Image 1 (spheres, rainbow, N blue to C red):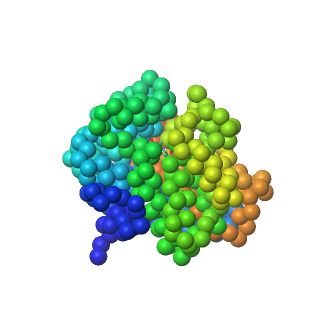
Image 2 (image 1 turned 90 degrees about the vertical axis):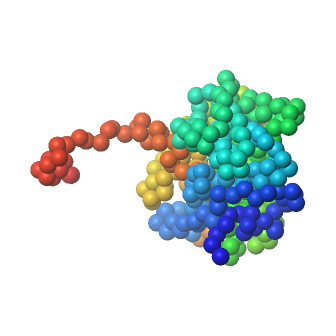
Image 3 (image 1 turned 180 degrees about the horizontal axis):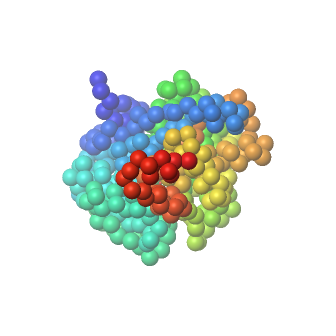
Length: 343
Ligand code: F0G
């Protein structure tokens, strides 16, 4: 039978209430791409789990199919989330699919254009908040406590259920868990989901390297960051809702949470693009972390199977690229002109 999405494929392993009504865009089933050249450089057997190939271009769709299925099944007519962009686009798309209203709150001026455009295209009401993601999250928590509007941020446990499925897919593809899993950490829903997924699937447990951006690294600093700042706007978060779970994942897995600079993130983004995989900046943080740790010799990845999770597509945030290159040359439409400019 053709592929029908993560609830169809793994629903028997997900703790979703009986009232759930499946709303799917056939998310999941993303490729685990072998990276032999880069793996050789880093001395490991490297794979990229390319989550940017989900229907709205990020891993959020796995959790959103679960959260919207539950919310719509119990009769919710409006869903809401705070977002650095990807959750907003995903919530908007799944709400559209279900025929319910979506309201999304984003930090003013800090959301990449591809994400904002997505949320608008799918018909959500987009509201910019004068403040950070953390401020927006506090607001949506408050409104969902006082009204019947359904919260679809990753505080919602069904988001975690859905996002576990990426760990299942990795185990299915490799026949076991990898030795290391490297991924970006923002609000810490995804790292929590992977760890729950690997534990449940019982195909072994990876060591987990969670990677924050230096300007938004509350879990590394050990305290909230009031004014988080990073080019990786997706993970520009100073008070992660599931921070405790991220820290216990690092501890239980004998892994760690580290921070990398924006320069390291952009360099990793370039390296991935050089292998044909264009991801948004936050999505390159996992690789940036792996490079930093292996470079310092503080991570034993030699000969090990390492999966780097690339959470969102490069098309989400094209301005990071377009702002840093010169416009392509313009030539007359003649053969001579073309030959003249080819180096
Ligand atoms: N990578 C991307 C591309 C993201 O959009 C996010 C989070 C993360 C990584 C971090 O995942 O929050 O589960 O630790 N984006 C959220 C959003 C916050 O609103 O789209 P996390």
